[in-house]
Length: 185
Image (tube, rainbow, N blue to C red; front, side, top):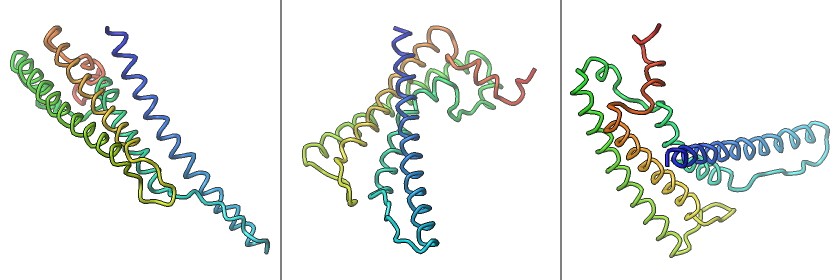
């Protein structure tokens, strides 16, 4: 089970990275097109007119998907912002209780968000909602990616809750300690 969960978090991070690379490629192509057109104008030639239509809508959707898909992987890496200064000064028993409470509450909130995002994507799919740009694409696609990211985050939060319950601390404690001030060698 552990290997399957770790693979799920890794796949979500790779999908997130693919979304970011896609944004970079689209923006790079747009920039390249403008440079080519500008150079042609300087040479007195007719510009080719290379344009990525609906770049803002495509990039925005890819960024939303990338952000949500990266949530679980960054949590498991210990890269989310936490109140480590408070956690360091708490007695172990109180810290344990606070860790359980925060992961449990976060899992419930994340589950609710995942449910709402999935419902939102389903409604967009039912009504064939499309993006407002020149290049129209189904809004259910980026909404589904966001819902999937929230579902995977919920799984990761439940995973951390169970890890704290079993071991007394989160799985990313060593990573967090390595970057926390005051825990330096």
